Image (cartoon, rainbow, N blue to C red; front, top):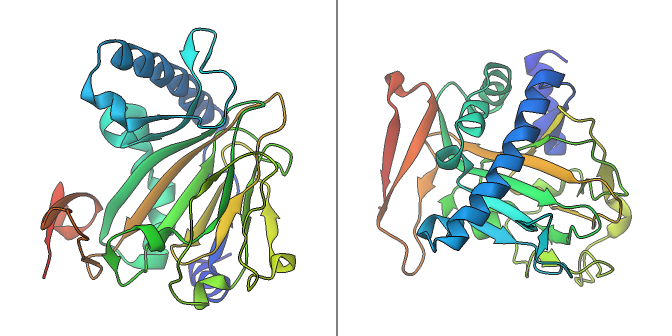
Length: 266
């Protein structure tokens, strides 16, 4: 698709699939970095370092460790923990696509690894990202990059196309046990939900109001994903109770070459 066609499809359907965003060498580098981060998690936890709070264990795993390393559900703030994933946030191909959707000036709201370990990866209930983020208007773009082949069996993302037009709604807890329904809401027509399988290195971009989730990983293969959320400067920071009144965000592109941009609550 041409950029204008990508934008039109995204505005209508709320998502965009990008095959082969990363090449095999880049995917292998990310996979090695995930192993290093697991070791880092173990070391930080052993030393009671506050940085260990960026690592979240898989809540429904029967095993706390595997091969001496923690079984993790996610790693937050990967941009600060990993040069590899900091560089990936500014990958030229990725940035160009996000700019075609949001404009030239891009700020980074979130950099995360979502991990579905073999046999243990929990389900993620249907939700909208913006329901949990203190940003208005809810017009961010989430990028989910598959670092392993993602299939329905190992918990690929599920979306409801066009659901970003529903408006901001309330949702419950995201992490769910294997076998739990992806939603208990009777007003959600699950028949409209589709799987988004991705080959390693491919990505799906979706609107922060897109209703999405994922099933559990019931296979012997991991299903790891690099997640980034981008926004343009017209989005405001609207802190909730106990949040700071200002927040600094990394600049990924534009804004006259600035490295960071501070948003102050109005």
